[in-house]
Image (cartoon, rainbow, N blue to C red; front, side):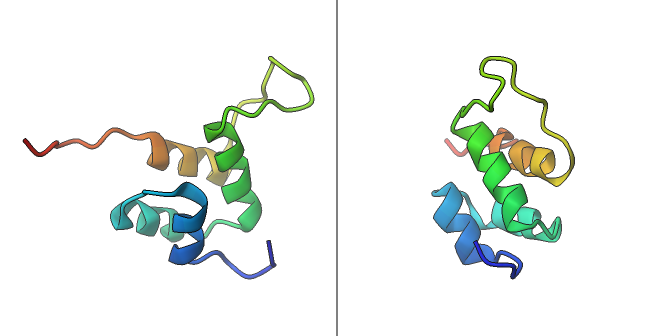
Length: 77
């Protein structure tokens, strides 16, 4: 990705059917493209060079992962 900050379109392109509220939460973190890519790799359960012993997420990538994987507090019937 380029050096520019990601926008809502980039977030939807990368994370698919993410609702606008969560996309805006991610944008509020002012993530770099690298932060998004790391979170996306964890979501895809990609392993790093250590194989099964994945390094824990930290920083903005961890915050993005939490936002994307968080359960909705209210479900419509």
